[in-house]
Length: 154
Image 1: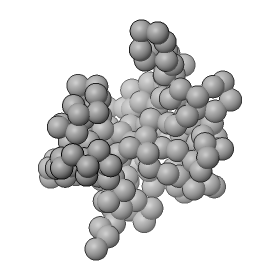
Image 2 (image 1 turned 120 degrees about the vertical axis):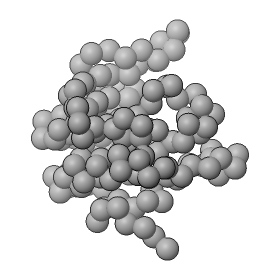
Image 3 (image 1 turned 180 degrees about the vertical axis):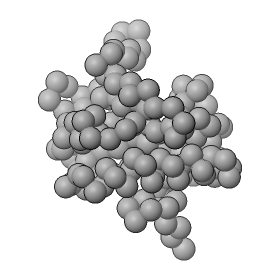
Image 4 (image 1 turned 90 degrees about the vertical axis):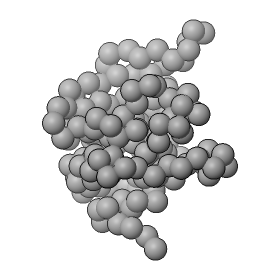
């Protein structure tokens, strides 16, 4: 049974993780975390779908604390839905990722928007978060260096 959060987002898309499945990690959110996910869906994801003319793919959504640790996510990652919620989004073949990034940047309220890797023409994917109580409108660019990932102000 598919559980629909909004017309364009279902629960399975949000919690799916190949790593969680292969390692037997429970990746189900608590009720409080579900509320953060629903806020994201209603106030960012659904409006984005109404504005954006191309298919949006979910690259990464919810991560339980155990899953986040397993994949080396940031200790305070918004993917864990403890304070707001984040998803990594992509378009088919990355063809419209810049347009997706610009649509979010110029037309929506968000907490954090990150141009993830890629090049000057297209990000590899986009990280975007929403926090119902406090949206910073922080825009960053992630780049890989010899020392690891560095986040630059946009």
